[in-house]
Length: 103
Image (cartoon, rainbow, N blue to C red; front, top):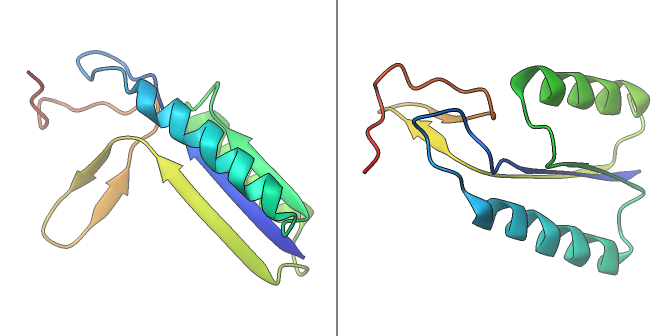
């Protein structure tokens, strides 16, 4: 079974700015993925991208398809933080704790 997981995080808590392009990217990627007719099930998250919701939806999707996955396509559009050795994608409820400065 071929699966796709598409996440677009547009809304963030202050002081992080809104990222409307991420919702546009999600819509375009969704359309592209569906047109390939390659994927048997697609999980799209864009409306509520709080950490709790994303974790719950991902867990349910993975559990639903456990042991049947041949290929997984995963993309997340949104803000990320970087350090020397790690990259972290940020959910809607991400808090900067002053580490990220925005104009």
